[in-house]
Amino acid sequence: MIGSIFSGLIVGILARFLKPGADGMGWIMTIILGIAGAFVGGKLATTLGLSAEGGFMGLAISVVGAIILLFIYELITGKNR
Image (cartoon, rainbow, N blue to C red):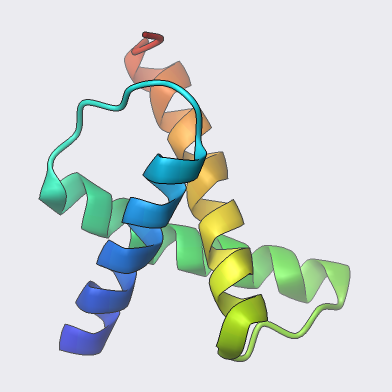
């Protein structure tokens, strides 16, 4: 559980850093975004037939999933800064 929260925080921070534009969300939303991004990225990797089992590839796929969720979050909340 603590490992998931920590990895979610890392993935969320990386996604927010890589996506252009300002994102005014707190640490809790960043962690949730990172954990959900890892889930979405894993599903995307499975669909595309890629291996997302840890390592750099797993991290990269998780960050891509989190970036996708960031764009969806902005569309839903209307936060286009």
